[in-house]
Amino acid sequence: MAKTERHIDAKPETVFAVLSDPYSYGYWVVGSEKIREADAHWPAPGSRFHHTVGVGPFKVNDHTLSEKMESPSLLELRAKARPLGTAKVRLELEPEGTGTRVRMFEDAADLLTALVFNPLTHLLVRGRNEESLRRLGELAERKRA
Image 1 (cartoon, rainbow, N blue to C red):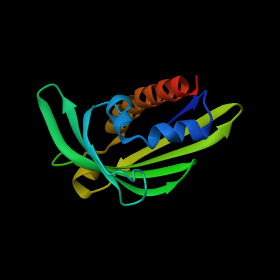
Image 2 (cartoon, one colour):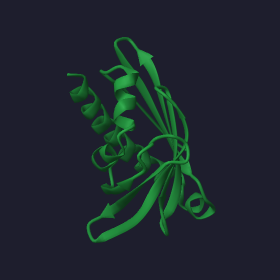
Image 3 (cartoon, helix red, strand yellow):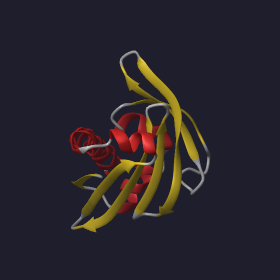
Image 4 (cartoon, rainbow, N blue to C red):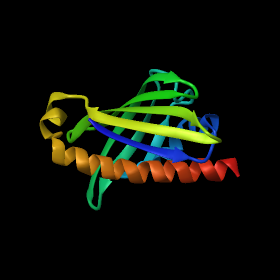
């Protein structure tokens, strides 16, 4: 499992407001190119948004499903990019001083992805998620201002 965390200088409610905007994922999630469509009740459990992910000419259209939501402290997602794989993503938000400590956990959600998820892959995913949390922070801190 890849674990990444970061302090964001915005309250948990502000960070969660960014997570509640499905169209923001096209910016802050590294590798997500665009959000094509989203359920109006995102991020309620069972809701989803449809995304395009990839690098260069290699693009995949699939979706991300919200599995659990406890506003403003928890969001659990299942991000699909089939046939490349499916990931379980857990975002935990905890008040820290005047801001928020965000913890992001990502792991394989299916057998194929589990076969590819190894210590080297975890390092790459962690690096990608560090940049993703930096971008999430940028959006939340801008929203706060």
